[in-house]
Length: 162
Length: 217
Length: 138
Image (cartoon, rainbow over all chains, first blue to last red; front, side):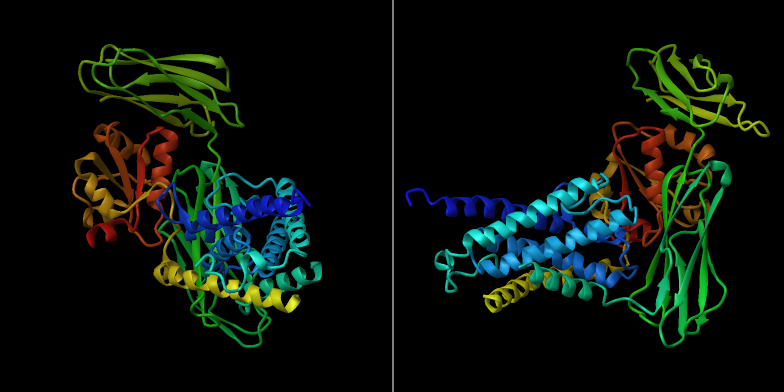
């Protein structure tokens, strides 16, 4: 084939999804506007979901999740450990979907906390639609990459994202 | 793929919920809408010991002196319910306010429960803004303050300035709803201060006086 | 395929765990602190601002009398009506206003700061992180 449509499509989708997760991870680690750690703001956002009143699980998620988003986003961008990255990205998106749906169902008026400190309350239908689009994109990447194998980013390559 | 993601998601959820304690709180976050006349808000946080052993509440701490929290007793048997009563006196503060109550128990000593008390105090009458100022040497132009009634009919009976060098005139835009006070210094050559009293007819039993502050800096 | 994906996912989970553990270890002390906010200022920064700052003590008068930051003005919610004119006499539109209380979980400073911004539409209002104890141990 003269034009590798599949690999171009995959590249565009990986750039979009990977870039989004890298961005979401970074702004939840560091608050560039305030010039400080964003962990507490993210912990507050998680607390607003009212899943638990205990601080420890909230802090664990607040510290770990942004790094996981960043690392898997980078893995997707550089095509390293691709199927693992897709599995994790898909799982995270599903968890986010469940969380946001449950917040909506309970009538919480909260900011989703997806991209660091936000003061606006989340538009739930729009947000859920966005997450579904993300899931479709992740599925598409998996389908596009199915036949390509891992040649471009083999296991022996330099460690991505560390 | 779908089955796999659902499996992974449920694993993650199981991980996230592993920290649940024996004490189950019904509504750890409570919100109230008040007016300044309410003076305080009272929240009842009920809980139940859903575990299999007795739970001892070690301490109930509030985030400031204006909030008190009360607990009937300390030890709760399995299946027993109890409540923490938190009272927040907001002392004229208005807008969105938030107080936290920290409950420590022996079921998870390192993970205190945070009870959240959120109060929105509705101000029946608003001055926008309550401060007007000029710098010395500025043009001695009049500055206006918008007076807005929120949900009640509030009439203004009188407006008076404490300083003859800064005058205040009242303009009625919508009787009972919207007024404009125009504040004007005679000149701005020296520093001045004036408190402008706005006497209202609300609430009828003890009409409130609002203050507009004027300064020449 | 599934095994490979799970194995790779585990590798990625482990890679993310490393920086998270470092970040978590550094930030452990946050456990008992109030959340950070964009208008908060650290004691060291406020000290650097020097004479460009007007300090506002948002604690009750008894606590203020027991000790306060040099030059600080008492202004709390309890006596807002009588104290706010005195604050405005000293207030300078060209200086920063830094509000503090007893630190830890006290939030009087935040309330007073919000009120100054909302009612008086004063700009450059900050809350001193850690409050009076942080200033003393600076």
